[in-house]
Image 1 (cartoon, rainbow, N blue to C red):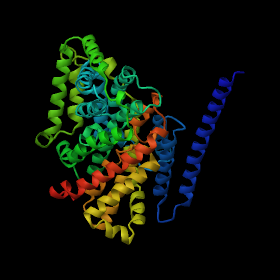
Image 2: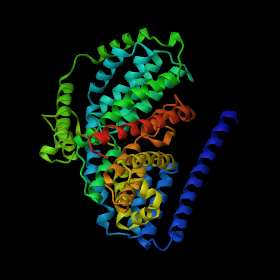
Image 3: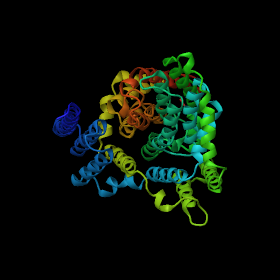
Image 4: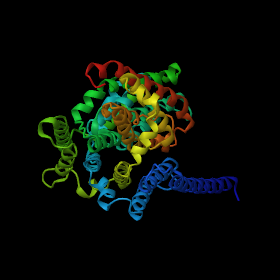
Length: 481
């Protein structure tokens, strides 16, 4: 047997062992919590806490697919009959779920045109002739996409073929700083792209939904943008400078005269702007217009999203084929629906109140009475929690209800605490499994987990400092905290 074949078999066996140990650990923790939590937790609260923790461990280590874990949690909640089935299924009926579905359908429809490629090629052609401009182009493309495409995973997927083309065109060798800089630009640019646009990240949607349902606080598209756009404006250049400085390049790697020609070639292949692209752009602008004007018409953001998906596929009016548009990622649908049901279950079972009581120690309650100190504490705690939990949706759906409970115990407005926790949960730079952009970039094989470590730590520090700066200035100025 060849040595390569032996290594392959050993790798497969190790992976099977890892998955078995992960599943076993999750199961053990489930029973420890179910029978070990104090009697201050009701039976329903113990069971719900055990199920959520079981799911979080499976999401973090992925012994089974993410969607399958979601389905397993759903079945557990139904089999144990913790609540009425209407509560268990409520996540599937949530407007947030339908916003994600509409967003993914829109992304599928847009992908049937050359619009995203055309814009991306144009930006790279314009500024990609230098290393600075190339890195900036890779980051900026995803920020522009965030205005129209409500999914970090989809945005990163659309950019990856372009980034791979760039790597090939500029001759970025394996393990070179140039290759790492470009690919980390895709990952980190994707992570920050959901900051200021409400539908642009699942974490944002979950945060708004949980605040609305359990604190009676409604945040519109415009309000989310108002609170977060200064943070977005800081992070875009900050991440750009960080990556450019962290990956020093030789002089011959700072100029790429072939980029402009390659992009011209690609744009020539696309041909002139088609009628489909024009219709696509007009519909996208109409959707964004409806999102921005939500305070005037009162429609939940999911409604314009679904209207957009309808118009894009309507025979005689739209430009996309229905059978292609409905090929969405149902793992994501299951994930957001079940995590919402988990959040509702944690609150309705009383588990969140008990956890909130345990966290409501004197020094912590006193600390969050001070808005600035509260913001700093929540930012740091959320970053630590996110590192332990990995999955963004799981982090948000666990943290937001707890923050609402702690705020109520302290007698302070829950909005700033929950909002800051939700936004901070978007930023996962250190581990591959923390966010979809990291995972997708890593899956190309062009960079490894170790490449994320040091720049990930630095990027995490940058986001922490940037959020604190915004808290000290903008959020105080507008009376948010």
